[in-house]
Length: 356
Image 1 (cartoon, rainbow, N blue to C red):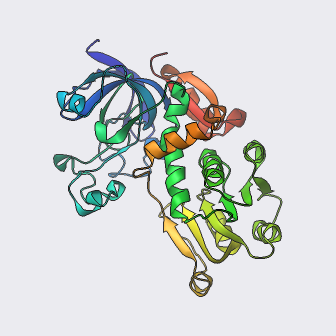
Image 2 (image 1 turned 90 degrees about the vertical axis):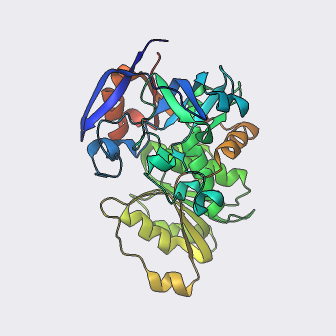
């Protein structure tokens, strides 16, 4: 292995380059992986644009990227004692909790009370800790899982967002037979459809537009084009006037969130994974939510759902690979990002191959 590797390095807002950087050194409980696939996440363009100054990243330079899969090349002896081996096929998530605070001890390491404090062991790969837009990825064994030989590396790189969709669906308190509205037909929404159906949902409806809505229909969801139809009215028409019992909010827009509030059934739940733009402050109908006992569930990342998501994808034989519409060598990242951000060429999951 050489001492340097190729990577995308973010030097400042909208200032990134394909360059050489040192290969990371393996520390306690860590593995160094050869990155085979890394997907562009919807958060990445915001990190690159500098939309979260001083937070993601805390400082420059940074190697972004956190939806990845690859092969273990090198590992610490403590990682070895936990059963990890060279040549293991793995995928990863971004969060590494400190492991000691009350949130981590409850298993909610995504809400680690020591967020950002690297002295106490917290990391968030690709956000403020070096990530996966590189030939090699250094990861804590807390944030990886093995993927089966039958799963492609592209599908493995999608297990991070798929496990987020699973967390969102589980937090909606979905029961078999419940009606579901998936609000937003991007990759996160499409994965939400898969999760909802695998957990026994009854009628599954999706609000979206364009080619993504057509893909949602192939997954068995009833499509609503929010550009042409009244979403709440159509949802009530499809649910006997009741509204959707569970709503998976993936639109990330003020209009979408307000439509979710207008579409939910009494006693239902709106489970949200999206982040509205700007400061995130929007107007919602609190009187209606209180009087109808609507649960609002905020969801951050994927605590303890990565291995569940891998098992779910395999047991249900979901065609995760079909969501990957584009594949580029990492050297063409600028083009890949442009296609992803512009939703060009019917793009969904755009994959980069650092070792292509």
